[in-house]
Length: 117
Image (tube, rainbow, N blue to C red; front, side):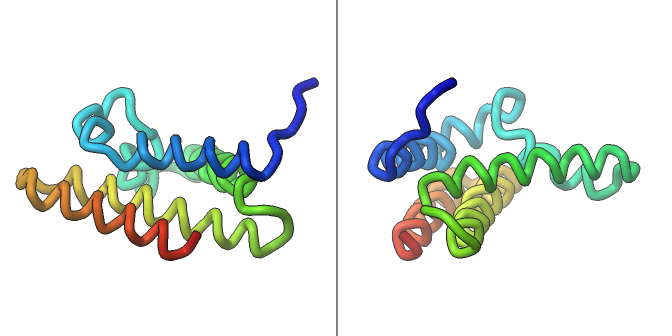
């Protein structure tokens, strides 16, 4: 069994993950990027079984992020806010061709994450 990371390790890991996630490279690499950002629009039109599976992936991502946010319902809520910011930014940035706008979306998401801690 692996030891659970301490709070500082979890926060550092989340910061590294978010930096990679909120990057121009992630926007450009749809095939190897986050399936939640890449497939969310398709998932909403899928059958219930696919939607349940997709929801499981969302729950796992929330749980992974929540490790860095502490314990209890506040940690889950903070993790969900973080996830919404990150996934939403990637979906929006991928939907436009203008690189300057993509960079603006990503930078705004980074700032929003730092505002919520």
